[in-house]
Image (spheres, rainbow, N blue to C red):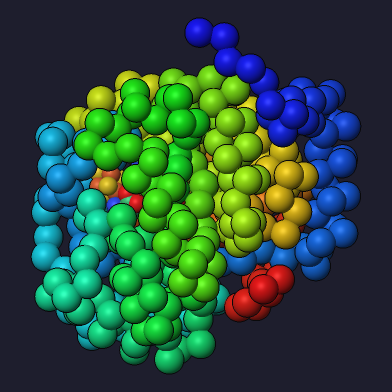
Length: 321
Ligand code: SAM
Ligand code: DTB
Ligand code: SF4
């Protein structure tokens, strides 16, 4: 099927296809215009409910459909979460993101009430508070906002066309409905994707086109490189080409100048030089701490050394808000 190309998509493609050094010079200039230079936000992730998820997202080690090394665990106790948040703050993170391996949440559910209770206390620490709990409607979104959540992460992950190759247990439309509920509640939206799942460059730009259609624009756009998790259907995917990653970061920076562009999962495979190129092209946030949700992340010492070598400073909370 031949799809007609929208003006938005054509514009993104023209940006993306520019000669590499022109592209990153332009995106760096856009970055410098909108953000204090040499600042990177450090965000710490915590999986507050790991594994046993009903969904079949082909990239995810937490799906109960696949035999992976991740075991299902109950929702963490509040004290342990607070301890982790405090530690993240002491290490220099200004954003704390709690993830749960759920299809979604419903008002009145005991576990959702527990999450609200955790959020009320975490939000007293002065950090940006992000959660990613799967699908929700405006009722739950409002409750989370009132409890002190500042941002909700709900990724579209790829283009509408490719999404059905990756997930069959929910639809792109379901994701868009959750995003609309988040936007209505006043929480800011963190929404991005994964590259390296077998999608085309056009699929990546289609995702970006959808992100650009949101009003307000997403506050934060995580760009994850697939971490090919043993046992998942995508276990054997080859790693993404680093120049494709840099091009996508640069295009995202130019398309969404005020968004935080987060260089997210997959940094363990990126050299220091590759990460430096990503920051130059417009990435201004990383996940910080030895672990993502279940997968490995560079160690804190390694990241501190990299930031120092590149003269990058940790960004204060709510910068650019
Ligand atoms: N269950 C909720 C959901 O699906 O929205 C929240 C947690 S889910 C693990 C959050 C995001 O992590 C996914 O949307 C995906 O972008 C990212 N992710 C999960 N597994 C990944 C992997 N193996 N490699 C890269 N990104 C991954
Ligand atoms: C996002 O886009 N990436 C983070 C965060 N949002 C929740 C999660 C990455 C997960 C990587 C795989 C894992 O740790 O299991
Ligand atoms: Fe479940 Fe989220 Fe993993 Fe999909 S990405 S299997 S919804 S935890």
